[in-house]
Amino acid sequence: MNKYTKVFSLVHGQYFTKEYKKVRNHKLKIRPIQEDTVCKNFLEDEAEITVIFEETGKTIIIDAFSDEETIKTYLGKNFLKLR
Image 1 (cartoon, rainbow, N blue to C red):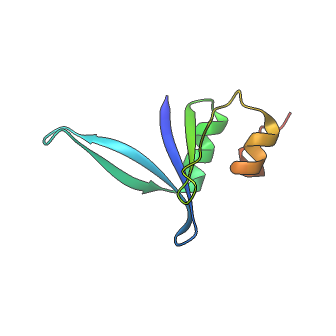
Image 2 (cartoon, rainbow, N blue to C red):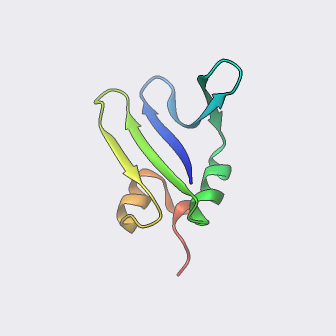
């Protein structure tokens, strides 16, 4: 399962990131990811998204089994499956 992070910030807006392990130095590298990539993996039930609000420190974990209202509020209607 892929783990992504969506960050809400007053300074930088909102963006998605993913952590990668560097084999050579055993460090975590954080890279920005496009929303389309995250949406595709989320709709295939292969992603878990952690939503972080930088100013308040509030954290929410969203996966494919989360409430539809929660998904729509924090991720957008593109992340909802057509039923």
